[in-house]
Length: 166
Image (cartoon, rainbow, N blue to C red):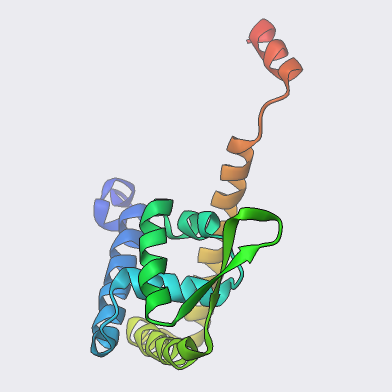
């Protein structure tokens, strides 16, 4: 469609940001009765998907500073929802785990997440839902691959060849 590529209303980045923000806002409203902050429920949700992760990796996943996560984990630990265990491979590091007390909370979070997802996808046929998820997974893979390629050092001989022939 002419003009769509220059229209910010059709920008992939803006749309993903707006949809993500609205999903978080909708979910936060559904979780408000539990008194959890967005940072707390996001941390618990990610931790439920990757138990035993170290704090540095979880901070990276959450896109927050490690010191910010450490304070957040302190609060979650004080509430009895998270425990730190020593990392057998690095005595300075900790691995993070949900406690048994957290499981009912996690179960409710996933129920509210399903409600949020249903509200967001209302009116979309199952095939359209599946196609959207598949497309987003493909976009995610492409971006992860691009980040990995960007982080891989270029062979010195390739760099020298490029300089001579560039």
